[in-house]
Length: 466
Ligand SMILES: [Mn+2]
Image 1 (spheres, rainbow, N blue to C red):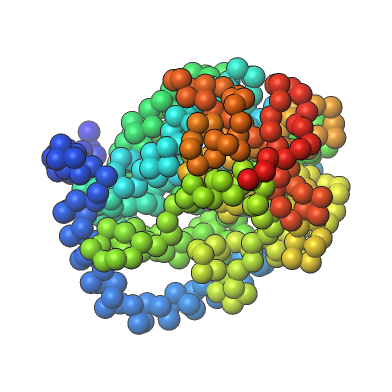
Image 2 (image 1 turned 60 degrees about the vertical axis):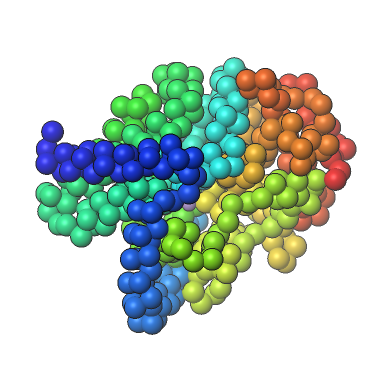
């Protein structure tokens, strides 16, 4: 073992000892004294650097947003190149899947290590996702996890989380072979912990999807470490064969039916190779959550939000961000309205664009102008309260194929049990789980939640009411 790996292992062991003591006291869900102290130190530095820092951030944000807009304008050309079967070069890694393959596309799962950063656990979504994977495995579906799958940006929340933060900063500061070695060792260790914390999920992926050659991934921003082939190889050591790409093209003969991408490519704060601001704001948010101050930024969606979706009150629209700084007060930094303009308005021809990244599930959404983006779907995310949303690509259907948007929920949750009804799609360890199809309202502005009938049957028109 080389010196960098030894350092990481040793620091990890010390952190584990502190975290175990905290867990034994029954305080496992709180950050603990090490994380609080580390966050307080960082806060102090941040406050001192804040006046010149915010001016710098504003300047960078404005510049990056201009770059993001140029990227958007270039996207029709990128899509044309992908459609003509070209790959490589500036495009990054392109994978092709036969469009007759049934797929489930999830994204923004943000799986992390134990402690406060374990958002999947906090939302009771670990077993829910296992139940989903189980169901899709029985229908021979290929799994596409479309970016931000493991989260390497979240730090703190435990002694290990603080140690990881420190090791990551060290890796970023060091140049040459030592820096590279420390980054590799740190990210491998974090990956190992993420896999251990989500063991049931990775077992499903390994045995039902990866082993059968049915596991695809795209690189997002929170898991941009997988742009490095060596870390993708480390993931394969845990789950088996994985196809990691930047773009996935669903092709049938000469025709491209859909293109899958995470979506950060046109985001000024989080774009590939230009994500310093995104990383910084994520790092600041974690700092504020651990520091002993009464601020909790960017909270997880509540059960009320799940109920809103299931009672057909969720907006099916596009995100708009500040035209100057490329971000909104709600931490959004991808302007879907601009993306819609760039990609050819309300066209009903050309490939479907299937994305994640925004955390807002939509299907054929309505723009501010009322025009519909007929060939766009966003899978949403895996951090709803007892809720994971996903896109299904019905490869078995005859062409022209259209994606479906679905929500998976615990059917026995008291906050929305009345909306789901008694018909569970599947069960997991005795708990009922429901798959609910989400379809656009006639004017496209809302998502309607449609009760599922027998498998294979078409969704029933009467929507759930709340
Ligand atoms: Mn993202």
